[in-house]
Image (cartoon, rainbow, N blue to C red; front, side, top):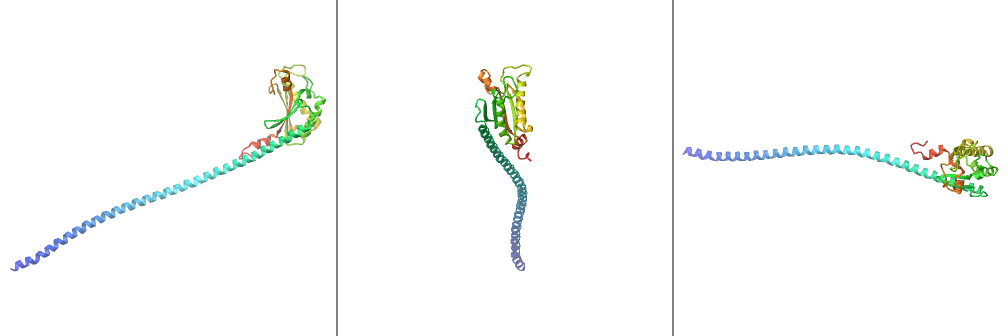
Length: 262
């Protein structure tokens, strides 16, 4: 009987021990799951930290690129501003030059009002003032000697020229295409150069135009105003042109870019 009592007393203890083992196993499983979750969360945290670091690096790169881009845009705007200022300056100077040409033409036409139009013509071509004088007004046929009638015309032109010391004077001799050869002239080149030189000498010696301002050029028959096929056409082509132009150094400064000008 005593043995049975002991057995009945031990059985509940064994049952309780088996129950505790089950709970322990369950807790161990839950612990394992929690550790797995923690490990997974740690992986996620590491990934997020790496991504965040990469984003910060990219943001730094973008900041550098953005700064460089801003500097580039700033330089471009500065360059555009300089070009705009240059264009404005050039436009103003060209307008001033056009105004000067208009004033020159008006003054020359006023001074030469009593001279026939077929003998003297004043016009603007290529942005320059041209005074075209017929050869019959200036010279005898085949000669480079200035006539007395031409002295008065050249004097009127010299008066206007001397009022504008900022201009250079180019005197061009032109002929028709009829060959010439005599004891004084070798050919049309020779004739055109000598006629231009005679005009320059007269302007200098008789009317005090500074020789540093003047150039004598012979164009021969190669720059005709019209066809040489008729007598009237040849008459128009035989002429002397006085071209008034800005001084070359000022002209080149006018055309120079912003980085080239003084």
